[in-house]
Length: 353
Ligand SMILES: *Cc1c(COP(=O)(O)O)cnc(C)c1O
Image 1 (tube, rainbow, N blue to C red):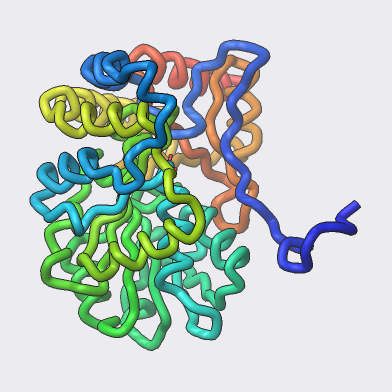
Image 2: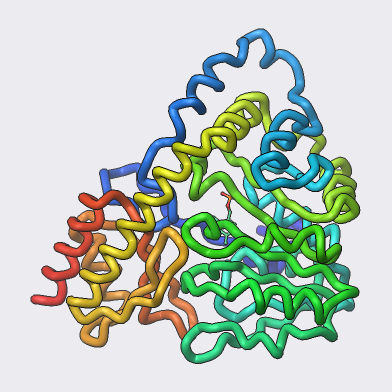
């Protein structure tokens, strides 16, 4: 069956995306999508794209979008790279900055796409075990490697490393790139973006899929020194010159410029998260402190699988990872207050049984 597959991909295990059900309506708390629609200005901007413009290729450099992102973060446009979702940006960064024979380090429990990229690109890597409480053993990231990847806040735990610790890691790895994946930083973590002009080895990867409600548009970006960004561009232009289409470029610019809407919706998500955490703790769940738009929870009376199945039967989708160390946990995305009330009620029902 794999006769014509190249040797490179014979044993490749690809990433498994969360389920997008088509058969029935669920309360969907399994892929960390935002429960609120994007800024109304996004649809206005998409509507303003002239249909005749779609005949033409988009701006390969995403000039206007990069300008808007640069202004928002207080950086220069040459410090911004835009790609087709941050998954693509991450892949391009892995290719640009890491090299076979030089070991890349990341935690054992983190975004499961990282080992997929390292395998795809034939990189050497080590998955450093997180501490028992899922905090990061910072000492193990202090030098002697060919790159480090830190998801902050971490997925799927929601735990955050303070900026002082990120700084220590950057300081200890002057000859290697430290990639900080901030997919969830807008939900309450301190961003490492403010360290970019101080550390030429820092690259921060962001996405509009979570805090800006644009998972369906596929917009991600990287921020770093002009030299690092030029490196990512070199890989991108060797692979696909036009990763963002005209609608995505317009949508992304409108989303990043609507600061008021962004602040309002991310505050709502954070508020619902704290309210939900409290309610789950009252039911006997152990709930990790989270700075993301999800909670990582476990209950002494039910297995992770029982909880996931029970919720599914009651119309609620959550993510369960059948993996060592975390198989008793569920990752529950934060929806609206009403969705979280329904999720909590379903949990109460399961625990009663
Ligand atoms: C969701 C997520 C991404 C990918 O986001 P896209 O921009 O939708 O590709 C990257 N990293 C982490 C940790 C994520 O959770």
